[in-house]
Length: 460
Image (cartoon, rainbow, N blue to C red; front, side, top):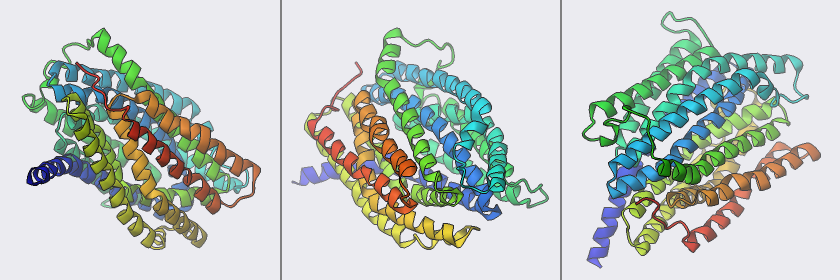
């Protein structure tokens, strides 16, 4: 019994070592994003709506990059667990190449179709002058944000590889430095402090872009200066050769993740577009609700990343199946319990947070109701998030594709489309019904985990 207790303590120590730096990084990032959001919200509701719409579009690119690096990251974790440095090096190269390709594609899409994409969020029921102003602010913000796509993609390749090889502190430090720069520049450029011009939404975009380059510089310089600790970087750029077998394996296992993240993020964008049919006030309210929810969900989002890393390393090291199962259950249980706590805190603050914004009382009241609904659903979201990363750790990327994006497009998007176009249902019950589909998804996830189809070693 004593030996089991020692093993448990060792396990939780390992979990904390991986999870805490990710929580700190994500927490600070989301907190500064919250402050950014509040700062733009002080300028006005129209400006905040324009920035919120563009950030929803950029979110699609960010998730595609995340999916691309995560697909190769499955192999990185297992290569690291089996001690194969060359395998880690080649997966890093794959991330860099794919990041460059996605950046070129993203810039092309946003430059040619940005105005049309923003227009989908401006319903005919809005006042023409408000719609025109929202479009103008959105395009102004988008054109600057395009400069930050490349450093975001490259920083993800470095940070993801460092985390998957056990170096979680450096990405955390890079994130902390970047968000500090972002916050200071936001304060200076949005409002024109310390003699700087008052740039409004353009200042917010400039601050974000500069912070992206700062984050990339930190992770890149540290990785190359500590090559002995990161042997994968030695010779990483001497060529971009990746073995044909590994490329095929990554494409077969990893590309469903890229497709999943792309379809899932587009699905959420369509969902928010359905909400926007109820007016620009709803756009603002959903933005406020999503901002505070993202800050509250830091723990379970970070736990999900940790589940993927630790389960991948255990599978790569040929850990016995029962030990892998037990460890997975402990991590999921910890994630769900933490969300019961944070969901309660979120609900308690639902009426306080919207008061910070320079917006109408109706937007504040609507935001508070949406925040309460999100708080109620949070424990279910924690379970599905952990289930997703568990399935992914064993290379079950097609299953995660079905579980995540196919569910969104088969269940959630049609439901939101029907409710928004063919009923007069107000936004609050519509939001509750759509968010409630997470309960169904968590049940499906529990059935998949019990089958154990994810317990597989995919590297040799």
